[in-house]
Image (tube, rainbow, N blue to C red; front, side, top):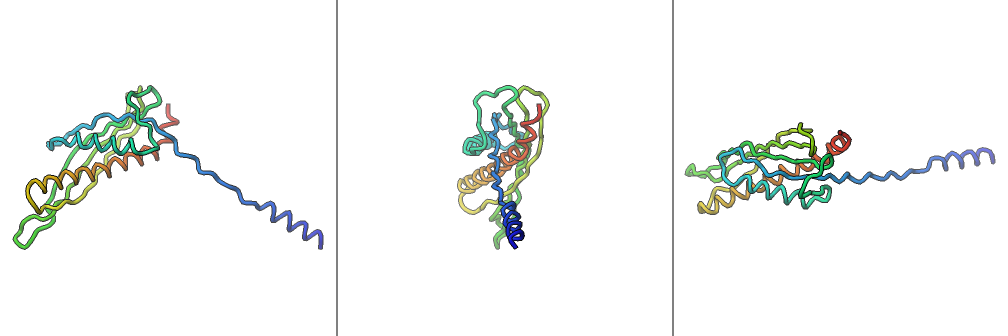
Length: 172
């Protein structure tokens, strides 16, 4: 009986739980290049550059650098490729009441000091804006829609950098 009790005690004590610590996310050094506007829409590059700065400076996973360091810094080079707007809502008099805006962007990630991009990917996002009110109000809502889409795009860029951070950090 004692033998069985000792055996059970040893068996149960050997099944101790282990504590697994989650590794902290690697802090990426990034340098944001100005956004290139390949669309006929004026001022999109300024809006996208401002939003990129907001997103990356406010995210604690990234250290945004003023000057890139060779072999350490990841260059982020975004370009806005297209903006398309479609009328999707109409009132009883066939006047447009709502638009759907789609923006496509291409982002190149390059390790500073190396010529070839590590990753190049395209992101396309859409949002809606209201078309009722004065022309100034409609233009304001259009700009706000561009800003919302830019936030979506750069949050996804940040996620892609974080997910690919292991690969980027180990490649030399």
